[in-house]
Amino acid sequence: MPLIDMSLDRLKLYEGINPKPADFERFWESSLEELSLVPLQYELIESDFQTEFAKCYHMYFTGIDDARIHVKMVVPKSAIKKQAAILKFHGYKGNSGDWTSILSLASLGHCVFAMDVRGQGGYSEDVGGVIGNTVQGHIIRGLDNENPNKLFYRSVFLDTVQLAKIVQSFDFIDENRIGVTGWSQGGGLALACAALFPQIKKVATVYPFLSDYQRVWEMDLAQGAYEELRTYFRLFDPEHQRKDKVFEKLGYIDIQHLTSRINAEVHIGIGLMDTICPPSTQFAAFNKINAKRIFHIYPDFGHEGLPGHFDKIHQFFEDL
Image (cartoon, rainbow, N blue to C red; front, side):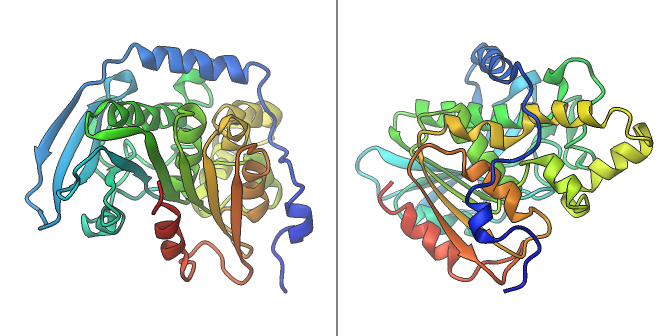
């Protein structure tokens, strides 16, 4: 079998190399405390798109720094008791997708909430009132600010938590039956959400992004989704004099350092030929999970569709 990374036996033991800041835990605890001061404000607007079995809404809520975050919300009509909820996060530069892309999960009888990441392809508001695409440079935004609170993905991770808190507050949602899912960036956000909101019950993640940045760099795979790492060094540190400090700063938004906090059952899909999010970076996050976990390996597949995996996710959430 061809390899672009370590053998599977080594991957199962790999713990990651990107440094973890000494004050990492304090950083995220203080971030959650700051978020707790943000009111659970939201607005629901009926969508023009509706179905016979579910109601479809646009939801807008207030995120950190007062950003207005957009979510597609689908509520099955047939429910006669409190329902489970699934939060869905999309890939890098993408959006929450078509309504039909989330109706399959709603067919389980679960409410589904698909969030647009701020500043990417949907309708969520980036800081400063910008709606839509400011995506180039999101990983590196805030690197040169002394305050790590300015890192872009800190805000996005906290948006996922705010969404979870709002969903849990709905009187038609069973607060003990909330799951999260996503592919690539969405997979990373699903893990971050479950880590920072430990009431999450189930996580279905696929080739998660935002993990072990230094490993990506050392594999010479800082391209595509991670290309801005190379752009940063070329523009702002061409002799790599601050390389160690850069990766330590990125450690604040490295999901591998969060996953030990997860209480949820975790289901992950990994393609061993993935050159976008290398398998070792995914295992760095997966191997630190202390909760129940299972992986599905696709030896000949990369960062692409994984045959049958949507069906596996559907079945995983059946008993949420």
